[in-house]
Length: 478
Picture 1 (cartoon, helix red, strand yellow):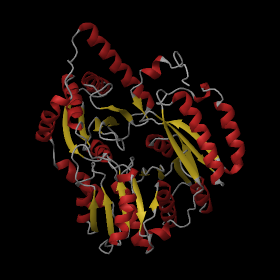
Picture 2 (cartoon, helix red, strand yellow):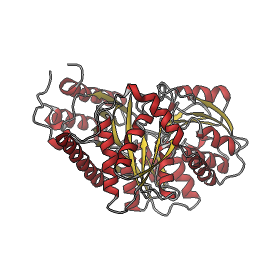
Picture 3 (cartoon, helix red, strand yellow):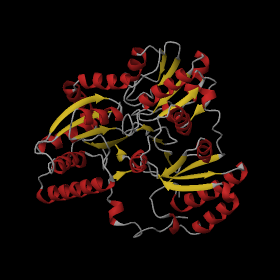
Picture 4 (tube, one colour):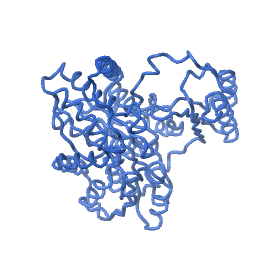
């Protein structure tokens, strides 16, 4: 049964470009078609010109075949509005944040869809201080883009549509000629300079690069520092990014860690701002473990000036309990690393992150960086003399089930018949020791149902009832 939702979605929501992590979509299709991306470049310069007469923008991207094409589209828009463009090439998202801030660019642009499959892509924008645009700035930029597109259509003066498939090769050639390689070395030196432990020579590490942005730079970093390194999924071909590997599929990494008898393994996502770890026994450790291990380590070293650790609504209740035993308080935000950062700045927290693997060390840098997080985890192992399995042993997670339901459109869940009653009944079954979080993904057409509690059978029943109801009215298969 399909729910009649015509007229229920506001005009603003239908036209919204930015989600929780920039713009996402299918490469070559709206909103990642040539005219829209070109207009984004123009509008970005117009926005920046309120503060500087000659804006400079740095652009980097991941290994998707569409990334150079999108980089060229936005660069041409920037240049047409009399802005200046430089290219950093294939680098992690956090590297562009670092370069933007330290080289005093007025903005940084990352072409990446992070953990999504290769057919998708995205655009993330950093301000001159290395922080992502906040909601207000994104809304202002959206209004300018739509106004620019409307003006071009009316006056027939806009940039003509460019065929995506026909220009992939020429865009790659264009990009390769303009990359500044010195920027990569600056980023490597920054990372290496923040590894302050003793010799890592005794540590064996397996790195899963997800065939993404870390494929060259991660091996170079850890080999430079003296780690014994085995690298997997580091041969990107434009289409194999995140394909059965990386942070979303760490099972292969776990097997490799055990086969090689490594001390730890780490899996990045496509743009390497996430890091999911595997201990020496092959156990997969999500981002909650990273937060707990780092919180305890920093507290023992008297480097936590604030008692607050910031995470999102998706973090397990077990993390909250484990931190409380350390005298620390978990503060939750909506999903999205930029919301974590905003709360960290508000409450003066030094450490925050997401269960998905983003971790922010605010005293070092205001962005999640998978490579930096790996260095800090290795540093903790070396300085404590403990194995990774021992460091994470005190975090005992509550049973949790996450179900993703593909949806046709995103409406207020309360508009679904019987939804409120079903949700209320599920919460009553779980009692005070459980919780339910239901939200739409900010990067995919998916509803996420997360149920957590003490009894697995109750969790499973509640999650499946809610998922079935959403699928019945909003699911893609009707």
